[in-house]
Length: 146
Image (cartoon, rainbow, N blue to C red; front, side):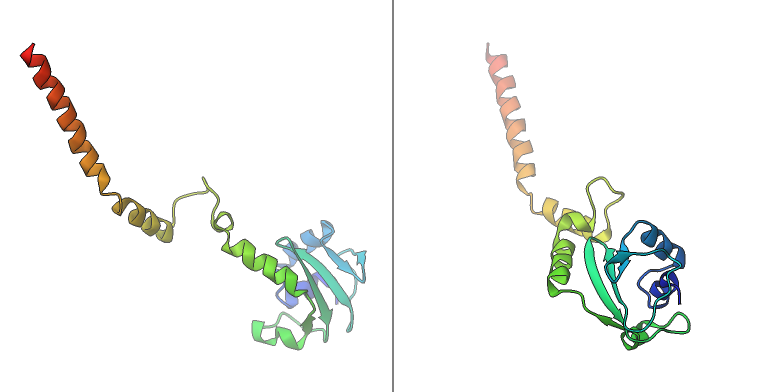
């Protein structure tokens, strides 16, 4: 089976064309060598994939006949990715910048709730407005006395 079709079949990429593009960008290697999308794979091959700034390593156990369901993927590949790579992914997901960069569209419902909670706790703004009103009213009273 072709490597691009295999990566699509085991649900590593959503579409076969995305898998082909990633192979063209040299993000997929087989036995330490970059490959073309037409490269045939067989049982026992070790594939290294660079996806989402993580280096995945998978070993082919069995080649599926067609695209398989997510529950059947462990029957066809063995994940040999280092634990450190998954820890990097967890840290990246916890980072707020990874969630949504500033200036990228409307706030989500979660963002709106956080903003509401932040602004609701600001009760001093009403006090400040009344202080300013008192300040200016005192100045007006002083100017009338002169």
